[in-house]
Length: 128
Image (tube, rainbow, N blue to C red; front, side):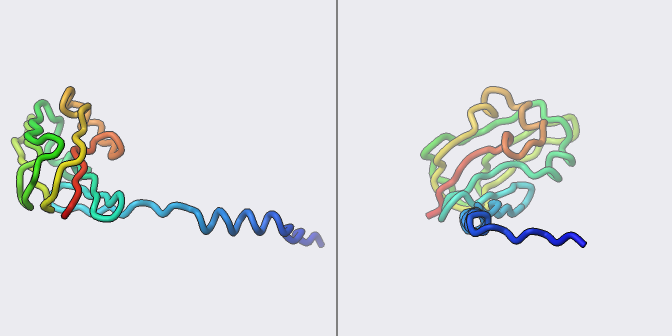
């Protein structure tokens, strides 16, 4: 009968170190078709949820009426999209300051159709 060799001290130490320093996956919440990913304390990245994208269909036009340093109130429009199915406005669930806008989305709104969350974010918001 073969028995498994016990881990060496160094293997146990490396496993412990990696376990303690593993970064947790960011928590993502969805509210009214907008996903929110908390980046750090009070700092969020926002984008369109998969469900919202599926319901809308292929987006042919997107208006991003915000710019970096804009102050937003909860419920302000952050993105208006037009597709073959509908015209839809998406709103921010939080008040805060826009710290970054996805310039790729501004240049080519069709990029949001890829439904790849890492690429189809709309803006980053610092909540007060």
